[in-house]
Length: 352
Image 1 (cartoon, rainbow, N blue to C red):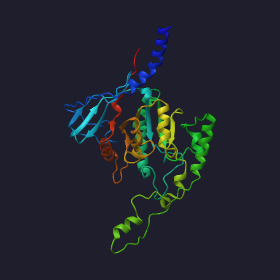
Image 2: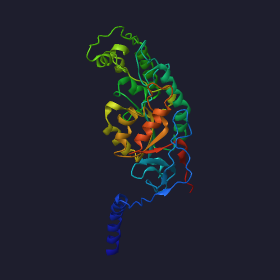
Image 3: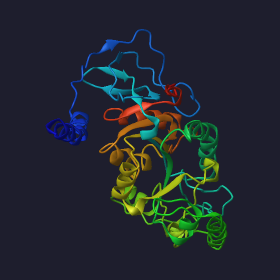
Image 4: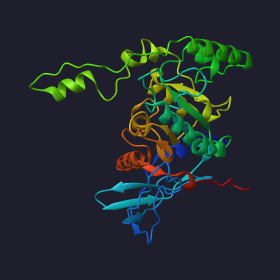
């Protein structure tokens, strides 16, 4: 009888012991080994991201090293103190990883939400630049997402606003999984709502009032470089239900999250789904990708986040290409974030 009681007691303690062991911090050997003759980073898609050619490079041991890992994610960061780039292999479990795409807005893609004319702006701020970003989505991000769909825990997209009644029917969300009939109704309602809006905004100002003492300040106050308000976009433009881009080729099982619902809701959903790691894609590297609900400034507080450097684009004012701006903003982010690239992410299913 005493042996039976002992066995029961040990069996009750076993989950607690495992939990304590799992939460125990490990000692990380921060050993830096020089990388000899390193190739440029982010060089697979130079038309989208200017490669990073820093040659002072180090390799360190794995930071994430999951038991039964099947997703290999090599990544790098910049350290001023190490005076170079530090590369690290990481070994993740795909079932504990989410792929999140920030702000794939369906603008100028035939769904009816269009850049207002003659001078309005949205997303990458001109119709031509919006089309360029759509090509990047189709050619770079979609194949990457497709390669991991069904292997990772979830593929998610973030959009501005709340989960309004129309988009609740149109897309799967954290709280609701619409059936086929709801999706059809949502698509019809979304189309009607977007096409009913008047996308005619105001013209550029023809005359400005400039003081003799401070004409430059007066000039920019009256004619700023970016005014996305009602003057050029028309009233209530930003109250429309922004659609998910057609170019993302979303699956019905993919999940749309809404900024106004707050980061805490997203965090709790990911945790409840067993997610510990995030591969982050989307737009725009210098703004939404960093600071919105699903931006890396939020996610990196609670998850192991990897910025997929060739699966994002920065805004690029005064340039015809996003590659320089994207590279610069990723380099700045790398001070406190891990950067990876699509070719550095490989799924290796475990064999029994």
